[in-house]
Length: 85
Image 1: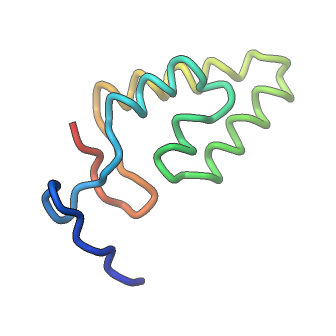
Image 2: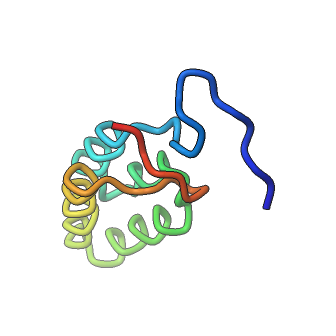
């Protein structure tokens, strides 16, 4: 695994993705997995989308709760770096 290049304006080791944006996307469009796609977790995003389609929309609750948890607890991006505030 390679080390990501240094990002000016952010401490090294912190994601360039925002916790607030990921949480809001998860709450509003969580049924489509958009919050997880934004964070770089494509497999979980696809899984959220499939669960929502298979359960005829009931699975959208997963994305909604996921968005709230991201806002409260934070999370990590696809490369394992913590999301910035």
